[in-house]
Every structure is written in structure tokens, then in C-alpha cells.
Amino acid sequence: MSIKVGLIGYKNQAVKLQYFFETKKCEITKIYHPTKNSTDIRFTNNFADLYENDVVIIASPNNSHFKYIRKLLDNFSGYIFCEKPPVTNMKDLKYLEKISKKSKNRLFFNFNLRFGELNKKFKIN
Image (cartoon, rainbow, N blue to C red; front, side):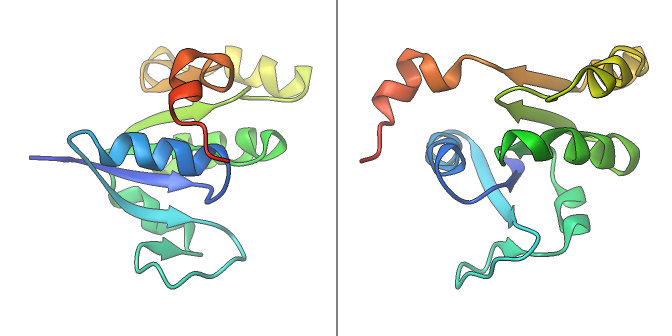
């Protein structure tokens, strides 16, 4: 049995995370971008397609993270993994501080991948 994973983002860090998760017992089922298109059959512009997964990884530009976190917390029952900082301002940070414990228990942040050993191993030139 594999874990179904949705990915928000399609370049840079998202590519590294996609490679990492595909080598584990995970299946990347959807790759979301709001406007871009791709020949990859997993690619979608419909955000709701992500809801069928067990986990959604946010690997988009920093300024979009909070918007995606809120949307997922409101509409998705699985786990949320956010690469890079979750927010870019104090207002959004205060919002996250106030979310329920249940929501906090399914929300994970990875601040270190860009600067850690794993990133060095996945270095794509």
C-alpha cells in the first residue's frame, strides 16, 4: 500500500521533493499549479483534485503558502507538509497560532530542507 501524495508546485524544490517521495512508499497522484499546463497526466489546475490524497505537500513560492494552508485546513482531511516558511507576515502567523490542536496535529513544516544534507544529495544543476 502506498501513501497518496499531492504536490503544490512543479519546479525547483517541488522537483526535489517529488523525486524523494517517489523513491519511498508514496505515489504522487496530483501535481497542482493554478495556471500552468503539462503533458504529465498527474498535472492539474483544479485545487480540489488534491483532496483525494493522504498528504499534500506545499512547495510553491513562499508568499503562496498561507493561502494554500488555509484552503487545505478548511477542505482537506489529510496531512499537510509545507516546505519553506509557512507565512510571510505576522498577521498570518497569528492566525496559525490560533488554529485548533486537531488542525495543528496534521500540519508540518520543514524549514531545513533547503540548507540540509538531503538537499545536497538531491542537488539538481
